[in-house]
Image 1 (cartoon, rainbow, N blue to C red):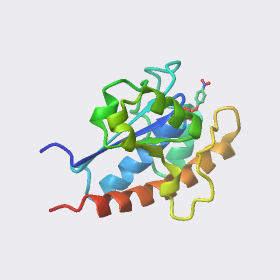
Image 2 (tube, protein in one colour):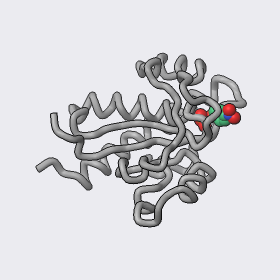
Image 3 (cartoon, rainbow, N blue to C red):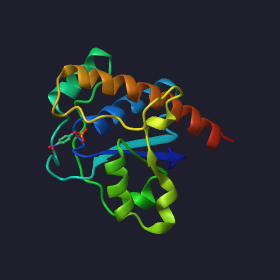
Image 4 (cartoon, rainbow, N blue to C red):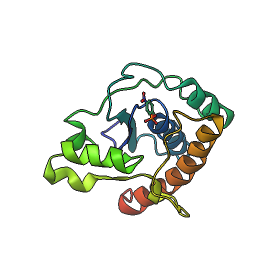
Length: 163
Ligand code: 4NP
């Protein structure tokens, strides 16, 4: 198998709630569409507090209820070579984007953006941090992430037609 055509990195603060949810949901949709050999997916956090940990149990449970398996994911912190390795580096909120922008070499800044605006009917720009709330916050994250993943897949198919 050759090098994937497109690589996508989802980023939040801790890499235990929002970005692993995006990673698992988007990966599942990529696989369902038969695009697993063309699109490489990963996730990371701007912070390092949870490095090596699996996703938050509330995120794993909420995802499992919709058929997504997050159990094999482990948190990592963003690193300098991510900016050259990934074509799309998508932040969950404005603070994450600001922190990524501060680290990113200028020639790669066009790879950075917010994830949620890829959702067709998005009214908000941010996936809200569910860490300090209850289970409802995690199911809301899934609603947003599913919609944005569908939009991102459409955008990638449009921008990178398989020849
Ligand atoms: P995430 O949520 O950025 O969606 O993974 C958080 C996880 C951990 C913390 C904050 C947000 N924390 O402060 O440890």
